[in-house]
Amino acid sequence: MSDRPDADESPKSPLLLSLLGLAASFALAIWAGTHYMTNDASLFYGLVAGLSFGAAFAFGQQIKNRFVPPKQRKTDWKVNAPGAAELSPAKLAAQAARKISVEFDQEEIRTMVRGAKREGIAWNTVDDVTIRISEGPLPQPEWIIAGKTDDAIKGVLVPNDAEGLDALQDAMKERLPGFDNDKTYETVIAAMAAMEGSFHVWSRKPA
Image (tube, rainbow, N blue to C red; front, top):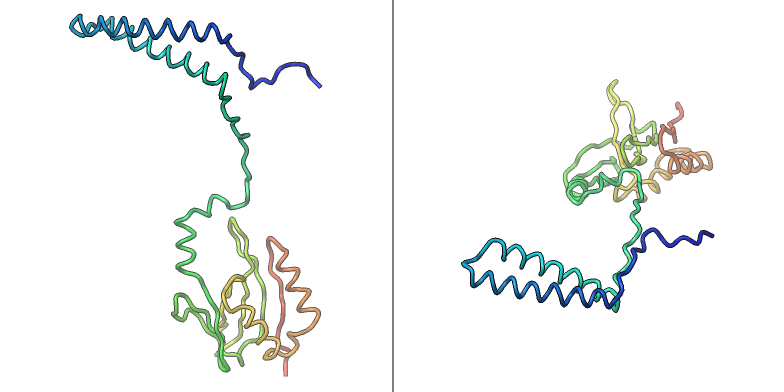
């Protein structure tokens, strides 16, 4: 271990010297201030008075620190979490304002934003479920539930944090043949642990 003093520890002036400095600077400040008032606000005396009061304050701080040690400053460090800069209050509020939820009934699955329908797909047209990891500072799994309708692909995009997703997964186990099995479960677990990529979860087998 090194015997050198801590680099942050500054040398302390003798207490007697600080007391003498305080008394001298305070006396000089009073003297200069008195002459400043009696010599039509002389710039010289005003400057001496200001410097003397500043010196008195500095000596006073040294004396105070002798009896009341200053608090140690915390170590300057940062946690560079991915995307932390994106989580400003304004952006969090905007994200909450467009928060997506998912609902379903016997006929269709639909995503909602602030109570208004965003997308929808009928249960009987769903033939593919894929989990894709969204790109961005904070990657997030997104469920793509899709199917063909009149030669066009239609579907819904459900963020993994969407309200109602747990209930929808239970419904898919009942409504989508073969969805409720070990392979599906393993694929979902792998997708939840990933930072990028696309994971095919289920597809409807030809009749």
